[in-house]
Length: 128
Length: 304
Image (tube, rainbow over all chains, first blue to last red; front, top):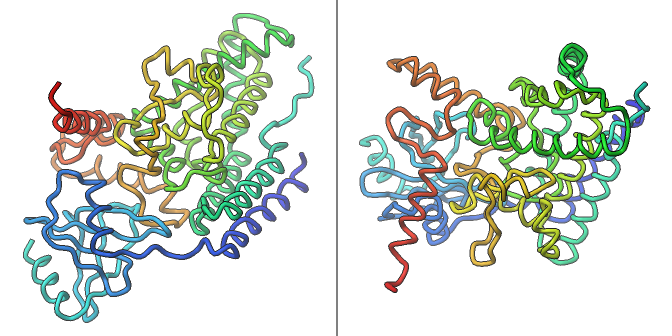
């Protein structure tokens, strides 16, 4: 197949498939609840003991207190990813937290927290 | 004189597109979406980048392989059908070992991880090819075939057929096939296991066309209804960005290997050792995860 045919065909496919996926409603983000966050974290970290779960105001992330360290569950499209926050850089601001992981595979996360839990988590994360 | 063999993968592009559209339609009709827009876009972006790198630099790899075959090729196989068949089977064996190495050696995993980085399992995932694969020099695994004397045109043709077959194993539409087929060939069921992160499924079913290789070399694991496949990585990515998807493991590997205070051996382990290796035991290899899972499962089993 010549490039003159191959290239337009590929470009057509790359444009068509995601457009259809969007039109079919398959772009909606997942949303976390405390129970879902706990379950999802334990799936990846079965040895962990989750003491407390706080879901971000937008439902896109949840912080989990594990006793001596913090875990996180965050939304990736319609699925989730989990991490322990060991080694991540945490920045506190007026809305909550910004988490920057050492690994390149996770983009920086903004976690919007309501005022009561914001100060609790900010203090906890700065202490650990 | 070699026959005029087509580039199977390029010819298959319309078939790939139609298959994706068919799978999406079935997902829509059944109300069970198997696609996510950003994930699909990331997969297709990887496919395009992979193609661009291949078209730009692939001639270097082909030139090297042609030179090896011409300089060291031992036998003249001709262009008969049995020669093609033998080349296909041996190429599949070659691909089994390459694939196994891609999972057991971080240098190769750094590229191959891209293909496993989707949490979805569909025909678009099949196209999520690693743009950095060529830089790991995977074609060195073809040297035995070339030394045996199979012409590079034949080797590339059968490899194309092999890739075409593999595409169709990336689907949840097909359950289990009849037992004789499941025994000999890699099926969607076998390859779902390969893409799963469930501890008992890790590092299994590498066979591209023949699952027999896994049965022979002890890496076969059966899919079970009790342990539904969860796809992706042990530590899933937190981004759909093409750059992060394609190079994240290279960056992390470089960070690990260049960290201060390590011995040369530890640095080499970070590059060429098993994925999950860490000098301080902070991470787990897949063997460690499987062992931990097996121990935990044994604890919850009832007393006989």
